[in-house]
Image 1 (tube, each protein chain N blue to C red):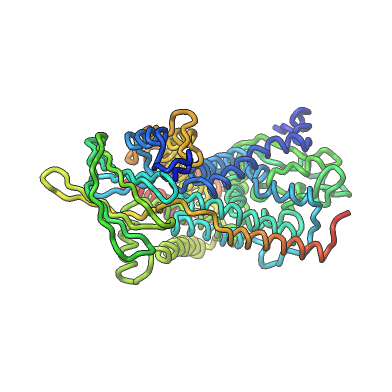
Image 2 (cartoon, each protein chain N blue to C red):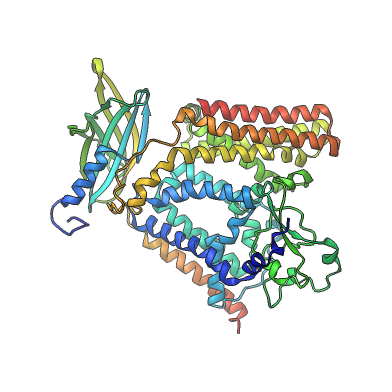
Length: 161
Length: 432
């Protein structure tokens, strides 16, 4: 279910527009340099358990032309298997993978494509898939520590009048 | 020039309302960062930019201009103070153990935070930033309940310690206007506090305080002094450095740690770092998290050894050698900070429209990606001059030390050579 409007679809129109904007001008959540090429990886929470990975590659010296990622390999920390995805670029030259996950996890990402003369280029990085929820245990420990300290001091000295 | 003699400024500094008003925006920003870190997207989040870039630049520049002014508005300190006052919480009154009456705790926390930053990408993960902000609040609040005044601010806070070192350059100082008046004063209200204000929270005595290393500019002494003998002076920048204060070993270690981390910061973004990490992984079978810590500690050890070698060779104090390296350390650190800012500052524009990563587009700039302020190969043009300023100031200090403290010409040359090597190495790494 879409977290923004509650619809059962992946995203509403505004969000599509938004994603189109970021695929035209991607943020650089991760920039991985490999040789003369910079691999830009942009992630967006699309809906609960759904993330869009937008990838484009550009020559760091020339800045253009934008290359498209043709394949990516993804291996998450909680699973030894590596998943392979073949990507199709959109008209901007960026490629987007819509990835569904069970729970937020860190993953290793390998991006590959071929440039002129069939020369392959690739880059690897580590990414966070999905935004983890705040840890309740952390807050319980934190509040307990503070309360313990306050109680200790109050018992020792009593409240100020 | 004493600016407290102007009634408007004096009244403002003595007014709790004025202090509250200047503190409030920082406390609000603190809560927004925590909210954004806990509930926003980990990918696109104003918390990472605010803490990892804007805050670092802000406190470095603020400290260079006004000493430890950050401590006045520090949200951890302010919240602790407010909660204690509102809930009327008592203080257990334990004395700070003697083993902590120095900056070792601050050095430890500094190294820990830096290690977390490089090992787990602390400043790039909004969740970690929020957790750390909450943990630091606990680390500030609990000592405030156990120990008198602001013991943690004095002995344990790494940010305060760094700002104190930067503050030696500041053209602003809080001092007693007339030392004789302090000597004759029988009540010493600045130490004990009175109805007008609290005792100095960081255990300083304005009558003898002659540098900005520990004063947190809380203005309590301005309120408590019965003789109106506290001055807030505008002075020549870096006036404290010319006094050649004898640094304690922990203060010297903090300085060397800053120096080592400025070099490490430059190594980290160069290809050399990956070569070292690959070597450590292949030959020593060490994970990167351990290797990078060892690299930082090795740099610190090398710098300490060089400082003691020069000091031993020419029979001068190690404190003096490290003291003249202080401008190099600070300006290298500032160069790294400015470099970071110039690379990431443009992220402000999209994040203004979508600060929490909720797919908002408040001002229509969410997808905007301007070019960086400076291309990576041009960074050296902004960071380089800063490093040169540091080097020149170190050279000037050496010249003064030679005249006033009788450092021999060969010792001067060796100290200067060490400073030049440090700056050149940083520059070389930056250019790679």
